[in-house]
Image (cartoon, rainbow, N blue to C red; front, side, top):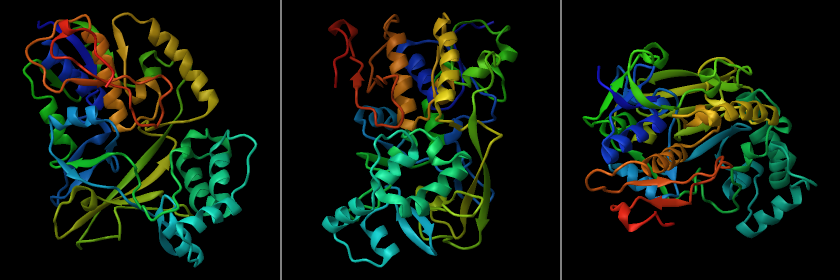
Length: 407
């Protein structure tokens, strides 16, 4: 039976990036397994029965401040420039989110300028002696009325917790602007794969050293397939048979619909921070740029049970994860990477960066094969949550030149 250098569990960003790097750069034989019936993880997209490109697990918008990560992924896809915009349904109006100058003027019937908007927000903001929770973050920035209208109910639906019970990081990443910038993200690079994420993953994994097995639980083959090392991107608590109990997550139910008209709503995403059971509605054609006489949308309904999507940002959850991390750190020949294995909510660029960082460590003890083109990785500090990755390192074409230098 064929001997593999690496068994990689999970064919999302984490597993696929590592499979590609190890196979192409270090000439390693890789077996990539996933218990789903597709590659791409939660970024998987496909054409539905009406021929419309949809994201099965909700909208995935690529954005990053890392040129190195963008260049790395650009080896496997062309990009369509796309700057994401979100509206919020508040008081019978559709208003820009994050809150900006137009949000304030439209909501309250004001005629503020950038300067007077700053003064207005200072006048309604509530001073907090200490910023500990998500509620503290928002109240200290925009005051109670905007907090109630835009944040509190949305957060309670999403997490089934009041913002006063959640870590400050949950809402700290949402900016408040006093200009008319309506973009959801500020990142330097914002784009969508021209042919979709699945095609990008197919290109990434198109290498003779990579064998992919879908509909496969790695535990079913672990005893029969020889390999040297294991890279695991699944749930860390599951790996250790829930020794300390299950790590808590929030999940989502996706309700996909296709409508026989070219446009369903007036923007890519509409948030519903109100009494509706769903949190948001996404119309995919805005994201993909596809031209079609029909349109497809998805409603997102948060729930407690189901696929693990969002780690719960509470201190007791972090304490439970740290117990599993001690076990993971003690493993020899097993490497944990990705959202589920490290119990962190990473954006796609951050998962890519974390995976390239692990590759850099693994490759230090391996010979580099052939000429490397755009072989890059990111160093991701343990404390990273939702901030862009900036500590980028470029893999040198010739390792004899010395260790990588800070970009």
